[in-house]
Image (tube, rainbow, N blue to C red):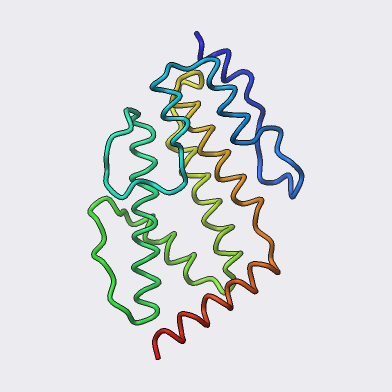
Length: 180
């Protein structure tokens, strides 16, 4: 019952709102969750991240474990394809990497603009999140899914094309200088 009251208070969030402020930020989300969740659930909400743990340790949530496995697989695929593109050695992909993850990574790496690649990966992650979202909209896993969505949207709103282009060229030049 507590999840119903929590989920019903969560506003809709969308990256389509441009640079306007979100109706809720991570801090407000965690604060709201503290009123309705158990200590263990609060701990999980407090540790939500877009960077999955390197090891496949259990979070206590099947939804989060699956999300982190998919995100970890995507990151491995991106790393391998980028390394191959630069003619460098790459780590072997873990067994959980599926064909759709490899295709998404190839598409992103093949894009000319890093911002376009990030937008593509954002949309891919949102679709994946929607596919994994629990059927019970008023479960703790729905709260976790909302937290991940909020992290994704907040991250996407931080991108600025000019600042990103300058940073990209600086990083790329440093990489090329390191190869000499």
